[in-house]
Image: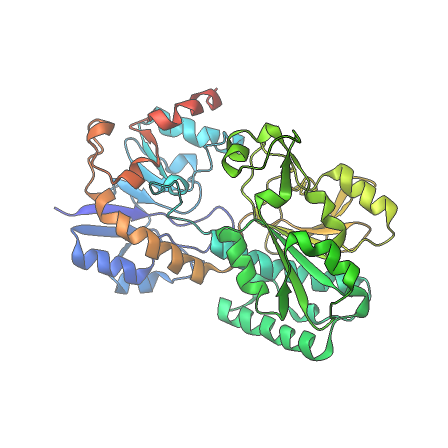
Length: 437
């Protein structure tokens, strides 16, 4: 007997065109395992419905026959059915208020919830993610924002040729466009007032690697954070290239106690024992790309107070744009005061007035804060994610969800991601009970 699994259409916003499984992978699963895949129709999904049909999926709106439902983003309350298994990015483990009604409904209906974000290996490394694609799209949008800001300053610049990420037909087209910008920088150079053009990357994981993948299409030279001061003092730089600085935790924080040496694990476990030193680098940066994982227990790295001081002391600080790919509202970058959308991706934060206005005009710095960046490159995002998800699907499909959690026979990596099992929190997520009121 075939297990029927469903794929929900994504309708959280008009930009969400991704699919958790792509047509060719559905064909492979259908051919090799006792599975039947049903997918809801969508007029905006990057892969048209007919392609799914040709590869063996059944396209229909009713997924009530499916015991297991895959999606990408959060699921509406009225879609949730009793005793079903749902697998998607739930954004609930931090107690996100806007998703608590959804979580409550799943508890009431005895559902099982598996969160992609929590599928990790024995080392705690995530196995399913869109981080790399978020970095790529975020870097494209940040470079676009830079070009628009410099245009506003009446400064001729090659970045003005860059479009928003979703305006390109593919990532390949976007990369070709940025490579052309790189040739112009190499041949004609930037406005002398921009030299040296220094871009800082906060973080070095998947998101940062994706962002650097785009930035590295431009002519660049990497400098170490410890070398920034001497780099500026020696003035051995060129307007015909850009510079890149990648920051690790040891360069962003220091222990509060002068007797203590930096230890990464100690920082993760006891962040209250450390303070940020990151703002000492900001006057040297033209652009900052924030790629770090952050929760409120960690220090902030760009504070409103510091920006007020920076913009109060200098008429036009070097820092023009922050690409906050992490997009934690008033989080590690405190001036990220709200999230933006692909069609309206930036605002200008005025540190003196502590106000924000959409666009690139006005006093302050431009903040790119799109909170759903991988959706801007839906083809590449879907292919990458589906390739990682496909190996888990057969084991999830044959797992036992009607008995006890201890007897469900899920792979260990997936077991770690089970937030609810038949409407009850598993042991790793019992702390979430405090979020349910």
